[in-house]
Image (cartoon, rainbow, N blue to C red; front, side, top):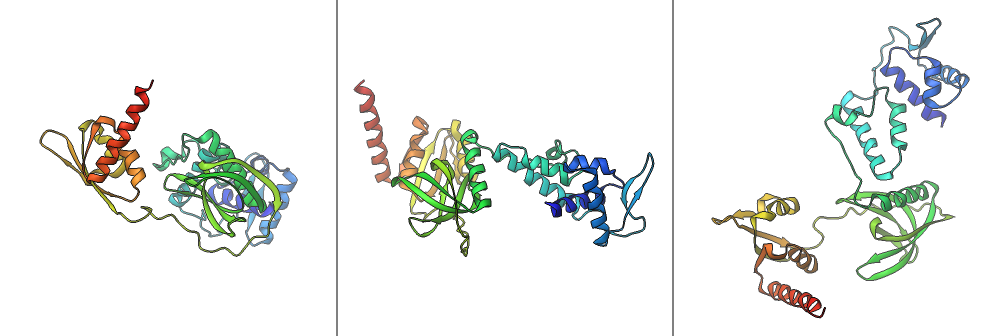
Length: 303
C-alpha cells in the first residue's frame, strides 16, 4: 500500500543522512518514477525533503529542519524488530524479515546478537504447525470461515468457526473465534486441529468480547503431594516447577512438595519418571499408581 511505502521511506530518511531514488526503488520494489511521486507527496505533507544531483547526490531531509532522527529510540526499534523476527520462526516464511529490511537500514541478520535477545517461537511440530498458522492468518485477514476436526478429551468433533485471533500462550498456539455450532466464542489449541480447511466463505465480523486469556494454573490447587526423587532428575523438576519446591535430603534425594489441579495429569507426570520417584502421599494416588503399574505389567506379560 502507498501509505506503508511512504512511512517506510520516511523511516529510512530519518535514519540516514542521504539516500538515492534507485536505492529506494529497489528497497520497495517499485519504479523510480513512483519513488519520485512519493517524494513529492511527502513534501506536500510538510516534510521538507531536498534532492541533489551529482555523484554524491541523493534525497535527504532539509538541513536545519529539526525533527527526531527516528520515530522510536534505538532500543524501542530493536525490540520491535526482534518481535518481528520471532514471527518468521513460527510461520516458516521470511515475510517479516522482508518487512524488517524495509523498516530498518541496518543489517538484520545479526539483530539478536546486537540486541542481546533472540526469540524463537518454533516447536517440535513446526512442519505441521506453520501451515496451519498461515492458513488461519489468511482466513482472519479475509474474514473467511474455517473448518477442522478438533481432538479433545471428549472425542473428535468437526468445527466451523469465524476466526478472529491467533494467540500464543503457555508455550502453545491457539485460534480464538466464533463457533457456529456452539454459537459462542471459543479457544482452540492449534496442535489439536486436524483436517484444517479455509472454506473461502466470507463472514461479517461480530462485536468482539474480551479475549479470554487462559489462567495458570487451570483450576483449583486441590491435590497436594509429597514425593521423593532421585537426584538424577533434579534438572527436570527445576525445569517443570522451579527450585522453590525442592528440599535436598542427607543422602542426596530430593523431597518435592507441590499442589496440582488435575489428577490424570499428575499420574502421567509421576509415571514418566519411572523408578526415579517414590510417591509418599496421598495414599489414594499411590494406590492408583500401583494399579497403573500392574496394568502395564500385565500387557507385557501376555507377550
